[in-house]
Amino acid sequence: MHHLSPLLVQSSGICAERGEGSWLFDAEGHRWLDFTSGIGVTATGHCHPKVVAAAQEQVARLVHAQYTTVTHPNMLRLSDRLSEHLPAGLDAVAFSNSGSEAVETAIRLARHATGRPNLIAFQGGFHGRTLAAASLTSSTTKVRSGWGPMMAGVFFAPFPHTYLYGWDEEATSTFCLQQLDQLLMTQSPPGDTAALIIEPVQGEFGYYPAPASFLAGLRERCDRHGILLIADEIQAGYGRTGRFWSHEHARIQPDMVVTAKGLASGYPLSAVAAAKGLMAQGRPGSQGGTYGANAVSCAAALATLDVIEEEDLVNQAAEHGCYLRERLEALVQKHDDIDEVRGKGLMLGIEMVRAPGQPDGERAQTLLSRCEQAGLLLLRCGTHGQVVRWLPPLTASRQEIDLAVDTFEDALENSA
Ligand code: PMP
Image 1 (cartoon, rainbow, N blue to C red):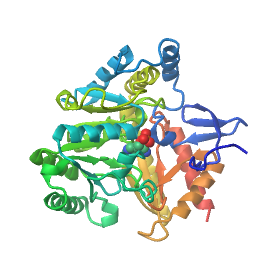
Image 2 (image 1 turned 180 degrees about the vertical axis):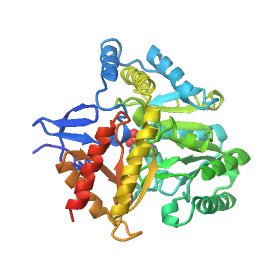
Image 3 (image 1 turned 45 degrees about the vertical axis):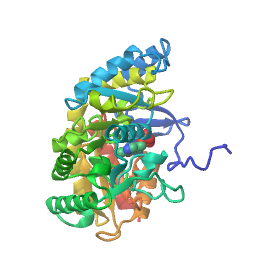
Image 4 (image 1 turned 120 degrees about the vertical axis):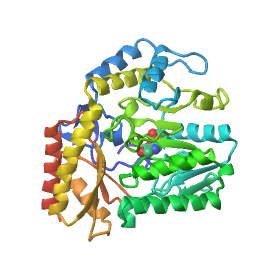
């Protein structure tokens, strides 16, 4: 019996001893095709040789130099490299360790810079598990219910979940923007609203891309009212959706980009990017913590960016994403218990249902268990756990994608 905390839930039966590329191995020699990528983290696959070499070299050179006291070359290089990929004008980067911490940094900075107390987040959004990030999260009651009081000054606006509204993108987008205008006229007037925070492709709620017209509508309102627009790219960034950032699909420019997961291939690192002038509104030393910008994590992040560029992973995610989507769409035609395929690039979800519009989390779990027995690791998400999510590493080959879909199809056909 191991002395693990019951808070540390394990959804699979796997105890991974080693990872290589798209594969996880246990100590007994079993292997699984890992199409979870540690929830979208190991985008370059497990232990990519270039990332391993960079981290190993750095471990022997310098591990920690507290960044409020001294900088180090990797941190400087990484902020320069990141700015090459960031929208023009977002020319300052602040580092921390996890997605939640980066969200905290962004919203505290927004409040400080604008002098306004309120934040607007979206229904179905997920921003993390620290108190402020959980206060902005509505995709699951797990992080809120019973943990209150949540942070004051947070308001939720509807997100255009076209599948749930049953309307087309334009109608859903227009309706949700009208609801946001209403919120800005009543509960959270512009003069009190510091920022809107949104995942351009919602993750944990079930892989819902925001229509471009909706994101453009947010940009327009933020400009009109002097509200900051924060893009939470923690799950969808680094090429995952077939563009470097998921907000690029809508051709909008956020005021802040929050990023983590795919940034460093699994070494803990997160970042917030904003204009220098905006960052300067925060007091030095008021953000982040002891461990931000760890030198090994930054080395891994630099190597990760090299791999993304050298292996053309953003375009590959777009191409392989189209291929995976086609294969999953073909399953929708054959199987009544799949209602829809959603998402972008290699961030795809399929909605399991009892009947059209009736979410079926149990079916999703049965399929995941069956796949795990057959050597494929998948995750699920959504309010009822009904969305089977496909998050392969961006390096996954066509053959691996085929093997995963064939295994899943077999599970669909052979489990009641
Ligand atoms: N935002 C989004 C969009 C996420 O997907 C996650 C993690 N699932 C977070 C924030 C929180 O990141 P972390 O778990 O690193 O705190």
